[in-house]
Image 1 (cartoon, one colour):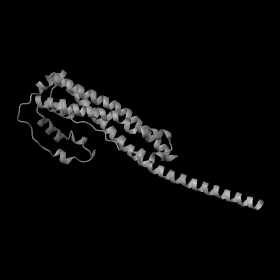
Image 2 (image 1 turned 120 degrees about the horizontal axis):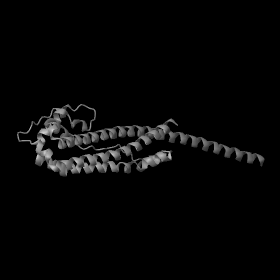
Image 3 (image 1 turned 90 degrees about the vertical axis):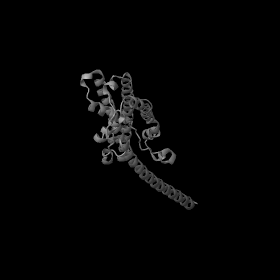
Image 4 (image 1 turned 180 degrees about the vertical axis):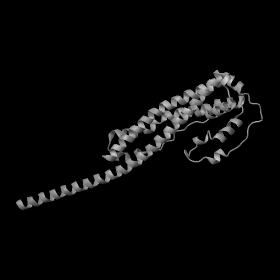
Length: 245
């Protein structure tokens, strides 16, 4: 009887040891998979941070050009056509934040993330970018529906666009940031032969309103972007800590 009991105990111990080994192997496997995901996320969020910083910088340029044009509106003696055309050109683009999205929830990989704070941040990531994107869309639509038609009616866009080509004012807003935009710079559509009355444009009360919208919408988009930037930095810091642990 005692022999049989001893055999049973040994079998149970063997099963427990096997389960323990399997659990440890499973833990190591899941940890390895989690590390792969974390490293991928780290790379993605660093790219997102770089792109967001670029968009914040671009919007700041839109705002600075709006302020310069306000100065010309308020001080006619300071007006210079080349400078006016240059700064009008810089109010024409729109910055679009297009972050890398990792849908871990639908793929089931979110369950591999052990850190609760990180898991929650990743769950809310897609909703966090909505405020920024909404403001970008507001400016793009306003530019297309209100600002462009006004400029076409009261000025000549050909000269402005051609100067933008030559100085690469808009080329840096292309998809390949930091890459050569030679093909863009080489565009040449010439300058208008029609009369351009920049004084009439600057004296038009609606221009001031359009520039106010340009400044206000993009400044608020930057407020939202900086909030999002802080969240991205927090996510990156958590990921780095998790990889090291």
